[in-house]
Amino acid sequence: MATHPGGLTSTRTVRIRGLRRRFGSRTVLDGLDLEIGAGEFVALLGRSGSGKSTLLRALAGLDRDVAGSGLIDVPEKSSVVFQDARLLPWQHVLDNVVLGLPAPDAPQRGRAALAEVGLAGREQAWPHQLSGGEQQRVALARALVSEPELLLADEPFGALDALTRLRMHDLLRELCARHRPAVLLVTHDVDEAVTLADRVLVIDQGRITVDTAIDLAAPRSHRQPQFLAYRESLLQALGVDHTEG
Amino acid sequence: MTASVLARPRTSAATAPARRPRRRLGPGRAVPFAAALGPLLLLALWAVGSAAGWLDSRTLSAPWTVVTTAGELIADGRLQDNLAVSAQRAGLGLAIGTVIGTVLALISGLSRWGEAVLDGPVQIKRAIPGVALIPLLVLWLGIGEQMKITTIVLGVFVPVYIHTHNGLRSIDSRYVELGESLRLRPAVFLRRIVLPGALPGFLLGMRFAVVGAWLSLVVVEQINSTSGIGYMMELARQYGQTDIIIVGLVLYGLLGLLSDGAVRLVQRRALSWRRTLAD
Image (cartoon, rainbow over all chains, first blue to last red; front, side, top):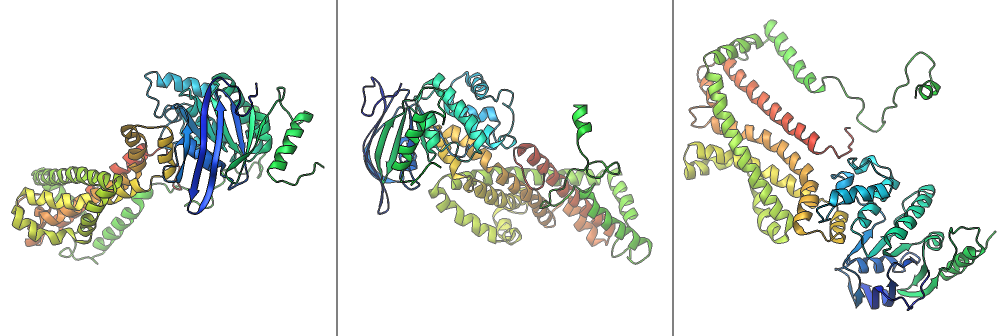
């Protein structure tokens, strides 16, 4: 299923050419090129300050105040999942999911989306009554209820505990298999990237330095020797001097 | 279900039922009849003072005299008539002032230009006591109802403006970003994010505003008035009837308390999504 960079995918969802972004005198993105195919799950790894969040915010159109240039071609229908669930505390869970969804059948679609993330029956709860993991599941439901062609996720599981994170990985994989959006998942967790993505990118000093297709049989696990090989090479690319004990 | 309850270990065997541990940093357990405690204590002091003869009835009538007088005032209808006139003034002033304060806060909270133009004058008005404006208002509007209601409006719109504006400006920018990422239309953004986000501020402003409305009322009713609770009290002053003055004071106090309570009730209903220290 993996597609190769610059590849032979018939439909392209994202196309970026020569993207530059500067904060003051510091260049964060330095002429970056990227393509993502339809339905392709891409993970973006990078050290902090490497520009990975800046890239995602540029794709989401959330960086209007930032100086820069370049071509960004993304679908109109794209959604963002933030690191914090970012639910409106004054709206019930269901109203959060269908926020800005103009369809007349919004409530039904919202209920279905909540059921998909395992939160059927919690429609009328307040966000603060949910656990961190549940809140992030509501955020996922909100992102997917509009059937986006592109899902942008900025370290969506970064604030969750390890066990919840593993369950969220399964859920995200399941949801993406069903809805087939193209995904750009920004993360600093190499295991997360190798577990979830069709293709892993490493960004360093504003450029993409590694672009690897992950060709692993499902279910992916640490027990696969190939998994460890991917992990090793990606850690190396991130500059982590790492020796398996 | 029962089994799990029975199996729950208890710290102090059969003596005390397991209590929920108190949140240590909170203000502590709720006190029964907390709101009535202070006023009742004051009332008790007053009653004891009158009964023991420490309080001269020319200085302060005894509570029971006040009650009898109130009964008489109700019986001959003077209390109701004056109360109706006062309530109408306060209500009208409150309504107009709330609308003006809210609209100004929205304009000034949602646009930098609006803020540049409006915020200064409101802050200046805030620095001038309402009473100080009365001479000018009398010259402009005479001594009729118009002047009285305008004075109340001026006292009401300032706290509504200040707190609503503050509420608007303190809406978390992350929610604005969320609205952008969901491509919300401006109307939806206003209805779902801006207005509910500013509601706590608005309601706090309303609590100041209702009390402020009664306050301004007292002032205007004691100037060239021929009706209202303030007039009733002013008349009583001329005849040295402290009991009637006290009836008026108690009435003002009750009205202030009741209207503040009403706003707090609305607050609790409308802000049930919040989890605060007081819960």
